[in-house]
Image 1 (tube, rainbow, N blue to C red):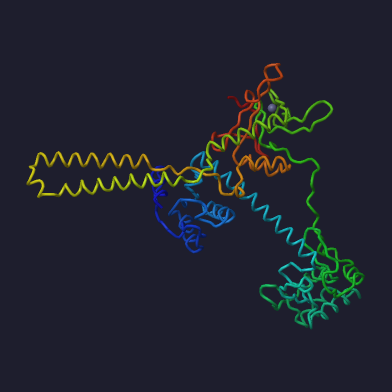
Image 2 (image 1 turned 90 degrees about the vertical axis):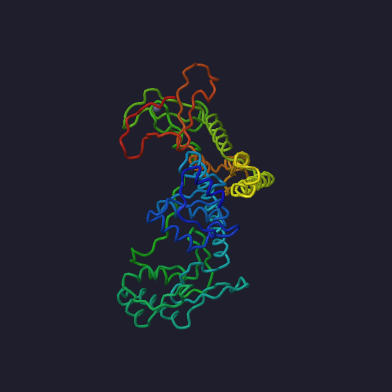
Length: 485
Ligand SMILES: [Zn+2]
């Protein structure tokens, strides 16, 4: 709290409300308190939330990520003193962006784990959807992999479904099938809410009968299929026959198209200084090494001085500069408690000096004894001492030193993370991490014929928030313009 207040004073923020609850050590923010703050931001009563440390605010990086997203959606900002996340300053924005990018990565990793867990569940024969296909009941969680969350035919409605399939195979219409289901009161079943009555519209029938769970399959939604997960209600031939002519039957989703060449680390980040347009990566070929090159001509015009640069050299340089910029803002040292202790001693001394000044100020007895003039002199001395001690305490106040954003995997430095991503070929993740701190990298042509001109002479990195850049945007007209420095 104290640090938050002094931070606010230093940066000209005003505190309109405080809650210890939001700042509870080691805990998670309480939802009602957080919601109340959000509401006040929405109403324009406050501009944001300031916390001493992210981990006092949210138990996990993902919690913090979600909270930041909610606060920003409400139109506010989150300031964290310890991590120096403050979207109102350039370096604070840099920290915010790095935090969000790394937390986002963590979210995706967890997504992958979840994905793996789903795959495993499907392989064990578990029906993982929250919706139980009508005609089945889902068994409870058990420790026995043979029965855990397994689908079983519904004592009554398995027969309803079988009859629906028979009707479809005999060519009866969806309307008639829907009538049957409504007569029999076939319920929908969700794992959470149990059975619920429903009205079967004709349009729902194709989708209902297209469910491959009825032939005993469990699916993970990403191509993992267990064909013998549970007892089928119909056989495969009957199922196929029932699909005939159902063009609107639920089609399996096509997997996303993936290109063979991985995305380049600086795609969309590195730009030709001659025209400001993004440079295109070009793979190594017979003519030379991999490069980024200016596309030279676009629908918007011609580049006056197109650049080309070796890919590896540029990437090495930009990553190094990115890390250096990050290091400048992040020091991975925890708060020095000894320094804190020293500061507390100074504060105590200042408080003591203030007390003796105030005590003597009103000491009429002493004034009577030593006379007005000496008493005034004494008061002046005590006042000076108090002011000196106060100044010492203020100087000695340990700065809230920035720490590496909490989103980094435990014990991992930003450099290690970057190296790991690069080594493992996670170009997409590395690209978004770099883009979180870098707005653009401009490259100008090598004026000299000398091959060994240092990259630093040709490259200018613009960190996010450092300059007001006007860059070409998709779908907007943009005259090629040179960027100079
Ligand atoms: Zn160009």
